Length: 171
Picture 1 (cartoon, rainbow, N blue to C red):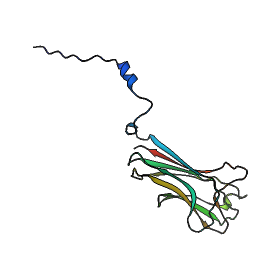
Picture 2 (picture 1 turned 120 degrees about the vertical axis):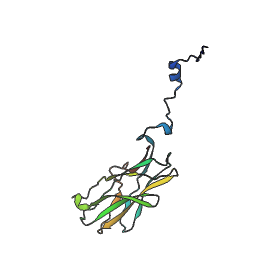
Picture 3 (picture 1 turned 60 degrees about the vertical axis):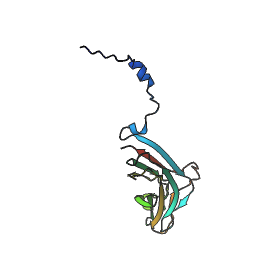
Picture 4 (picture 1 turned 180 degrees about the vertical axis):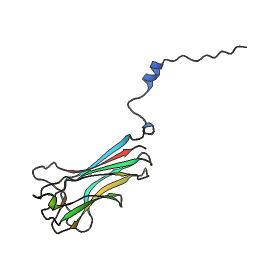
């Protein structure tokens, strides 16, 4: 007895045309792919003249697509120190109310003229959630008596702004 099976003919070329290359589903993205990017910015001048944490008004919120995603947080402040070498400030990154990292402790002695500095920081977080989370920057003067500006409005460069960028990275 002979058994014969017939398969319907199909064109590979036609099947390839059916694929949608404009959008790859999030769950098909390879590890290390950037799933989404969120940016926050602040332009109002903030003085870090207090010995307690002060909000810098710089924050961004993200709702991760996957609970195992990493969030890469990149911060660029437009800081300005003082000429007093005993004065320095610290910027603090928080996820909701949890302290994650401190950035850019610096003193006025690092800049002889008291000019601007542009401190940057990065932090890779594992929030383990798909709920909305907010990353925010805080600052405080740690030592000394002269004010330090964590976000500095320069009259010669009015478009200057501090930024925080959040990137969700698939695992």
